[in-house]
Length: 333
Ligand SMILES: Cc1ncc(COP(=O)(O)O)c(C=O)c1O
Image (cartoon, rainbow, N blue to C red):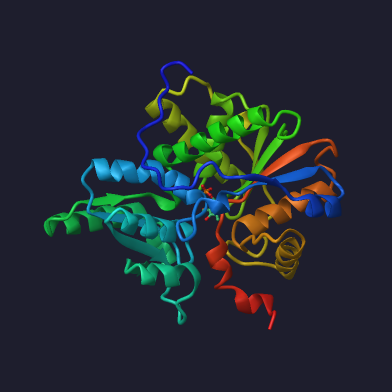
């Protein structure tokens, strides 16, 4: 491990998260055994993958004397909701820059942002392209009022946030060592939206010698975008935290082709699959991230990408609240 050190972190998540089998789904698909790492159980309101990242990022905010935490994302952003919850838990004020128009109904994550009294500013998709600059401007505005603002980039997907999933890889390594012959995973599969989870898992897999390949399913943009984005975060991780491993682009494996109708949008097949998974396993996967990633994994299994003897660990990165903004699409009643 050389002189690599984890940065300081404030404990916010319920860790370690459990690893469970999805036996009925795996049997139905007729391929390898699928396990699920329950990062949806990192907390209740403060749940999902973002909590692991926020442990590092918000510690930094506290160290810098922040009074207001700013971040950005879509209207149903899990990251914005998790940031708002965590900010309030720590006595900080959340300010969210959301892409799009104020919707008629305040549902899902947006409802929770409202309950938390987060200040929400809406920007057009075009303006959102310069979200980091807008947040820098808001920080100046806050400073003029005597406040200290701290901006977190989209998805907390910078080197510091990625340390949350380096930490998760360490946890997986410990769970694998504690369960030899059972948790001997060949692959780790997860949804990728802003790249931080993937970057952390790839760096952590190298650092802790995990004998598995990390596969990210992109839920927006394309493979090339994520190879570049994750490659950039990995380079920053290496530079900033003195990680004693070389990252080659080869370690960044993206399963492309499952964005479907677009970010946050679903096909009837995806919705039917998410329902089937709930019925079979009693687990809820969301339409934007985990449901799409699991749908992609199922499709790749059906297409013969994996050996039946393989063991796959799917990371359930959370996102349940956005499902509540999709009730009508499921047309259950
Ligand atoms: C539920 C869920 N899963 C997966 C992701 C993707 O993680 P990342 O942004 O680190 O790629 C996100 C956020 O973007 C998310 O909210």
